[in-house]
Amino acid sequence: MCGIAGFVGAGTAADLKAMADAIIHRGPDGEGFFADQHLPVFLASRRLAVVDLPGGGQPMWDGAGDVCVVFNGEIYNHRALRKELEALGHKFLTDHSDTEVLIYGYKAWGEGLFVKLNGMFGLAIYDRHRKTLVLARDRFGEKPLFYGTKTGTLAFASEITALRKHPVYRAASPAKLSLMKFFAHGFFPGETTPYEHVAKLPAGHMMIVNAATGARTIKSYWTFQIDPNTPSGSVRDWTVELEQRLRQAVASRLESDVPLGIFLSGGIDSSAVLSFASDARPSASIETFSIGFREKSYDESAYAARVAEHVGSKHRLEICDLDAAQSMLPSLLSRMDEPLGDPSLLPTSLLCAFARRHVTVALSGDGGDELFAGYDPFKMIARADLYDRLMPRPIHEAVRMMAARLPLSDTHMSLDFIANRGLAGLKRRPALRHPTWLAPLQPDEIADLFHTPVGEEELYGEAIGAWDSARSQHPVDRAMEFYTRFYLTDGILVKTDRASMRVSLEARAPFLDNDLVDYVRRLPWTAKLRGNVATGYTTKWILKRALARRLPAEILARKKQGFGIPLSAWLRHWTPPEKHVPFINDIALRARWEMHKSRARDDRRALWCWLALAYGLN
Image 1 (cartoon, rainbow, N blue to C red):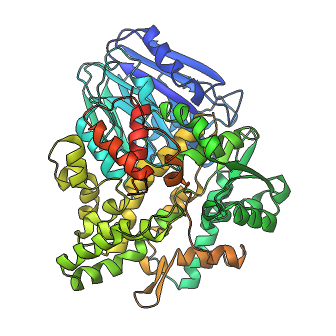
Image 2: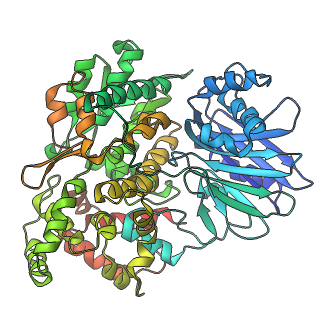
Image 3: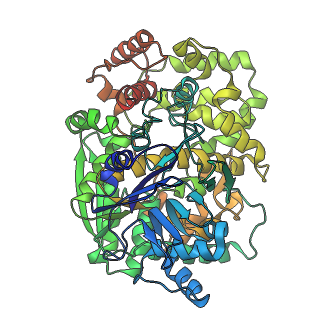
């Protein structure tokens, strides 16, 4: 695991060193540099040593000195690829470095390499003879990769902070539409970043750069889509196959030359990871880590302890309370690099710091909710269609006004919170329901906050495009594509990456394994979401069947909780930020904060976004 940086064009070795120094937390174990001053091409790496500790230094070259790579991530099928490449005649110099597999894989398969990689990565490959630099990012974007869009000089890095150490991008200013999108989603969707002339390389994409001319081309090599071609066999056959693929996905992510543990919430996904890990390792040797809360409605620690006891892992618990959250808030948000509107960043960061005191690698349950229709909004889909047909708009608006008057509660997923958030998405066209349910602010509120008219197509263009391009026409399948391609990639995985790498911890997500995903995306939506409007719905139905013999019944039957925090209550003890966020109406947000403190309204999501931007933009 590493952080990478580099550029093609104007700049010096000192600029490259400054870029690398900005991401030392991603790689505290070593650094490496390469400069081809004639083209010019500059590459840097910061290393967190996890696999092949003596042999994995970067930048790494092939034996002939033709191809060089800097790489952030892990390739879980590197041993199988190494055998395939050795059969083709390639000679490896390291014992078991996954980085070296990238070099000879590129020499053998060129751009075809990336679709063969089962893992997480943001990387740069320099082909000296072809005078080509290739950037690539893994299928789901577990590892970040940013680049500058100005003509003349291409700079890239694992974090925007490092990218902005390059003199061409040092003065990059905030982008107004991007900040508006942030309040519409709670994250920066697609290629969007907070700054002008800075973009994200999308997940599952590569960029080919002519190092001599600076010309660049971006290509997609893989996109998550639900495949309507259902696999053969019965439900029992599907369950058996799913269990086998989960077992293999977890086993492949247990390879490490440093201590490894598991994040355990007591939910289905992280419990599944622990259960399958115990198939490959003695249970007593597995360390598990959880975060608890003093506020009972948010606390899942008892469930985590129950699963740990059931499996037999060595379990550790830390409590996240108001004092801990408040003390770490400024430094955390100021070091996020890319502001995030998800307040569960706080306990996730505390969890990562807690785990890092004991291990260097941790497995998570990320991806399970998106792949198996695990979120509560999936239950709303059929009800939303029925509501849309039967409820006249004037009555709908009256219902919304009544819901707005419900007594406010600070408990987790309280009635007032669910009602107001659910009603916000109803009566909207299907492509906008899910983004609206997640939105910190609605389009009219965003327009008022920024004093700028803005249309839904501008705010939600990426989500609308994904909805319209889906191969399956069923709304559950389309919703899974939205949550996987945007909420997971640009929200959940950003949170996990920044929280973990901030403390030099590598986080791995078995549910995002290539073979597992390729199978799950072919399973019909009825195997993931079971039930009807009258009887109610069961989420993750087939996953629960696959785990029925492995986990306690009360864990499989419990209602999904999510990694929430008592933000609504905590905000009443915090003060608004002093720093001005460009383009927005601070006075309006301060008024919202005062209304929130007085319990006149619940603005927790919007106020958190304000905090994230105020501390995070620099």
